[in-house]
Image (cartoon, rainbow, N blue to C red; front, side, top):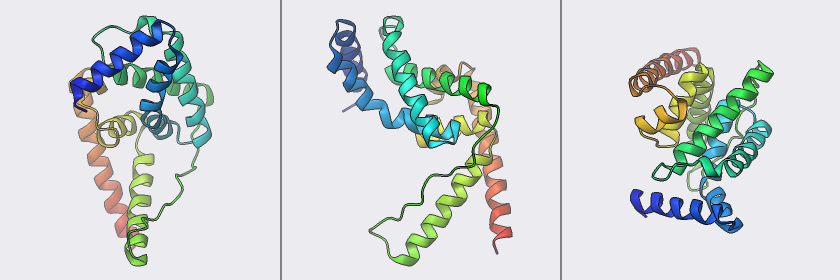
Length: 186
């Protein structure tokens, strides 16, 4: 499915949902559930809170569906709702959880490759988790969600130049964190 096809399909689902078709909104939830959860998890750093934020974001989206602008990207809109829900929760709790994603081995790899890959993944997760929230969010949206600069700017309500600057600074901090981690582990 091309980008334009996906956008048209999302728009059609929104129209159907506005007309009362619950299955249409369920299709939107199914399409974006993983991406919304991933953004929430990377922002909240807690699996249970990420699940709650994901549910809250879709609930808010459903309630506010009439405010969705025709021609806009549903993904940008739902990511903005998710990000703001995360910010609201973070402002309320004022602390972060140290919980990590569970380690997962790739079954196609041998034991040594799995250990190396798991260690690299752990180091990268830890480095991303150590970033300030504004950088962590931009890295998540750009590299892990594959979003473009303009979409990230819309989600985070900031200029595209600021998104690029945050991404550049995040990469620099990640590079330094990974180098320090590598030196300490040798």
